[in-house]
Figure 1: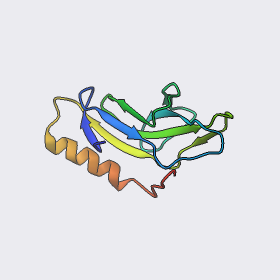
Figure 2 (figure 1 turned 90 degrees about the vertical axis):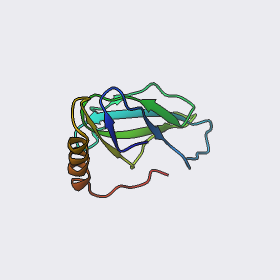
Figure 3 (figure 1 turned 60 degrees about the vertical axis):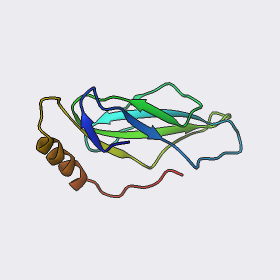
Figure 4 (figure 1 turned 120 degrees about the horizontal axis):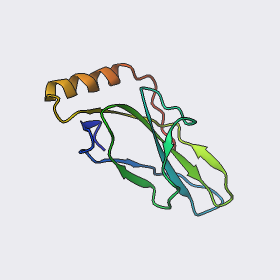
Length: 115
């Protein structure tokens, strides 16, 4: 998925891989939250699906994304991996988009890997 794009135009894809559990099958729910930190309680979550990837479009701003992995027994794990996306309005220049993405990237700390 791209790290940035144009509001309501760029299609982003968030994917989960390498997850396993004793209670299969797994379901995945994907969440977004505006800002530079992912807040799972305040995120907007997709309904759980069996496919480990989700395509979506976002409004202008900085967005953090995460995923819930749910096994057949109902156990839920929220991924430790968070993607940060910078989305600019269609009228913004490419330089504005690059500066917005640079700003988000500078604020990043550790990015883990949920699998």
